[in-house]
Image (cartoon, rainbow, N blue to C red):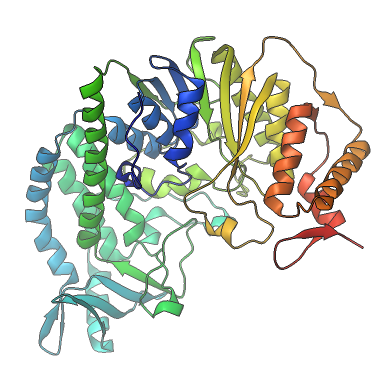
Length: 518
């Protein structure tokens, strides 16, 4: 049974979790490689887009992720028994008490006139410089006089926060600007820290059950919006907002957003997204009774608690090496919901000196995770994997793991993303999008091909030259062709880095076209 297709599905806007795959690219996979009533699995589920689409298509779903915030997103996304009317009644009670607290923090008097700031520009010494506010239908900007700023700073510095808030240390990692001794609380002003702490205490005081989970999800989704991690885009104006992408960098100036104003915006998005899911479920019930099930687990993908050969189809989007250190960055969310992930079990490459998560460990871990997929998958059934990386060594880890586990390619294509992170958009040499490979679990053992490293390097160079001769000269097409060749020919890669070969023997121009080095 097919679900409705719409241009925008708000159920996938509940949270700003990274790496959401476009649902329209996943639905054909579900239809092609599984049937209604089948058991499907995503061991690195993240936000849960694939599992949600599979559940709506009457599959039984095992949705697993090691990250607690991902589990909360998945639970709220898939839960059928959430009363949105009750959620709003809870919120009205919360807001009735919270509004007085917010007004005390955000109301500002300048020259005898009172304002309620929406966003405040502050410098890296936390001095408030200017703010935006609504006047009728217009959003206006006003400077904050130094004497008013100083009065506020005195109030803020002297305030003692009574409500609980997280004080965990970030995992030191210079790549994501997590400095030594830096704590979760350090990425908030005293004002937003106090306002978040009070809002969380009121959510727990006035709400319960699945409705409380929805409010907590909206709370976590809003945290970064109201931290010091929101940069101004100066080319658009001194207080034009950028977005928190990755890391914990605090610039020379940052934008501090009104917690209540932005929480209400986020809550509307969460409720709209939940309505979208519930409406989709209701439309499915008109055509057939919904008897399928889902199960959310929080286990190590290298040691799934699933019976041998019990799964009909696996789709997964594993961590892309060092692209996003998910658990390290998710501390901003997990700390507020008082969850501590099992960092040692994470499959990732991290630049943090305090973690033993290098490319060697990643290669071993991704091999174990794919071995688990083979163990739980039924014979002659299918496994789809998406992957993106700027590292040839990470590609090698994935291709070798798939070949060594005797998965054989049945389809190799490109999965376009709805949006691209800056890391992909702003680098000429980057790959934009993800490889999407579907394998079959073949019960006939076939050994992979092994070449001497020098011989394999020569073959890769020859392969690239052949592509250039055909006019195929962009990074996407070159890397996609090499990966498909390696997987279909079942070539086990040794101490060979494909990206290094490309950069050593070829040159890229400003338009992103490769050609042979002189």
